[in-house]
Structure formats: C-alpha cells, structure tokens
Length: 190
Image 1 (cartoon, rainbow, N blue to C red):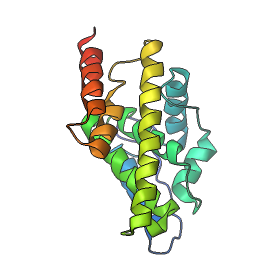
Image 2: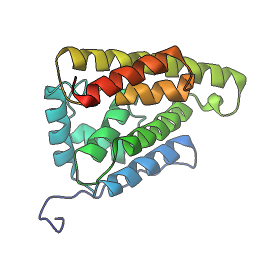
Image 3: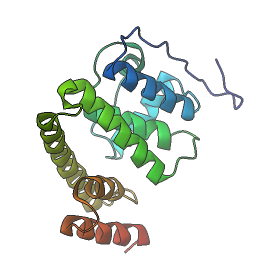
Image 4: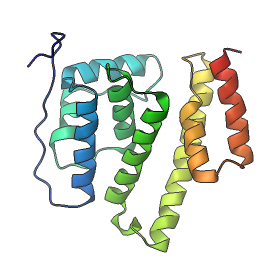
C-alpha cells in the first residue's frame, strides 16, 4: 500500500490478546503507528538503523523485529519499545513536538511496566519496584545524554533525561536543576 506521497505504509495486524496490560500496550503502539502515518516495517527499520549509526539508539532493528513488535503476543524489550516510539514520532512526518514525544514515551513506559510487573497496579510493593525501575531508567537517560554530548551528536540530548527527572524527582530537585542548565546550554548551542 502507498501513501498520498507515494511512500510505503504498513497496516500491521493486531495480535489476538486477552484484555489486560499487554493488549493495552499493543493498542497504544498501534495508535502511535497511526499517528506516524503508518510507515512500513522496512521504513521504520531504516530510520532506526540510521539513528543507531548516529548514536541516538542502542542498536538497529531488523524489519522482522519491527514487525514482531506490532503483531505478536511477545512482550517487547523495554528500551526497544521506547526507541520505537521515538523512531515513529521523530522519523516520520507526524509533526510531533519533543514534549509530545516525551509524554508518549512516558505513557508507553508506564504501560510496559504494568505488563512486566502486573502486581504494580496499585500495590505498595509494585509502586516501589516501579520507582526503582524509574531511577535506573533516569540514570540510563543521563548516561546516554552524556555520551551524546561527549561525541557532539545532535541537539536536545538532555530533553529526555530532564523529562524523566521532573516526573520522578519533582521540579525542586538539585538533579532537575542541573539537567535544566545542561538542557538550556545544549539547546542554545553553547
């Protein structure tokens, strides 16, 4: 199938999933795909590969791996899921703002945690496990931004870490203040 611009589009068949967190996550992934104007698995994999070569993503994904994330009942890898959201919303003409991408990634991350830790829905232990996972994700985001800054790859490398830190630590945190300064410095070009 072709879009109005003559580019290949993909309409992935949804897997047969029972009502629950995995179905909710898969439905959300399909809605993000629609927002990105339904690029094919091949086009998604190409954009992912280009981003991996630039150091934006940890590694590239094959066309079949991309296809599987949409069409199988397997639980996707968490970091690959967040990267897929980024690929869809920044690599295609969706017009998504950086803040929108971060909000969508945040919701995808929360849905993913509910799939991996179903007990996290409303329990104290689940909330603590989720918070621990969020701290590790924040540390990964900061480390990734530091590497990107070190190699002078791209503008806005601190945006994701700043978003995660605000969500987890609140606006008054010293970590948030430091990340805000780095983000300002990064986006102003100094």
